[in-house]
Length: 358
Image (cartoon, rainbow, N blue to C red):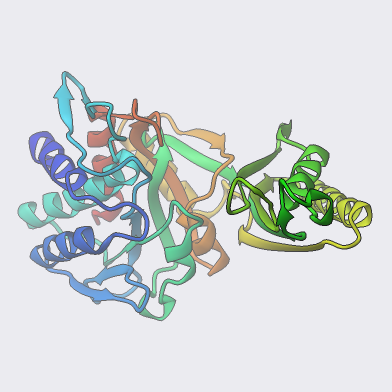
């Protein structure tokens, strides 16, 4: 039986373990010990992802990620009635430790009941928050599951991610020419000025219902009194519509070419990379139907919602694993006002348990 008190305790213990993206070692050690107590064999792949299995055939893959966004160090969780919150000097870390906790509680509930369950594999990944990096480097030779439930959505577990966009990141490096800003500025070619011109030619924000564009970071120059020789512009665009995606890519390319023509002595390098591919959930897929049936059996009405973000489910689907992403009881992700709704967290554990029970 799902134990609410134990589940809340597990969650609070996990969020107190710092694990910002790239620094997941301590939480991986903690989770390895917990999974071994649940009778699973654990494995760390070369990228540091944590995989666990009971060695059975036709397993269900349970997935969540270990990392959190900043500010996520020294988190102090507080239980207030039916909510878990932080002190608002940090995030709470519910994304994605609520998902991790729900998986652990479901496995422990079944273990203590000595109930039969289907075979299981677990994948707790690194660096999801910075572009699904852990999942993209996951050792899939250690997995045999053909279906996966991914606890990494906002809201209650009844909220199913029906679609996710393709995400393209870009890194633009601009090289001009340095000069003394006070003595001979006319000999310089300002990389920052070129970056500003480039940014002014780019779209920004929500372009339509399916498409967004963002310049997220700019850097340039070295000192106050020198014409800056170098600058960089980093950003992303994403869309559910592949034709629109191509149009935006062309708009970016044309903006770069225009700045190159305006400043022919400059060097502008533009690197684009696809972080993850889009998908639309097939509601007729057998595993999708299984998740819907499990929710209904718990008295929960499935709600299909399109997302502007990506999860490890995007990567799993590319690898041929039928994946369904569900909510994990978290609201206000990536903010200091993030909170977990305890009844929803309990339901997330119930959903995982229901899918596992034979």
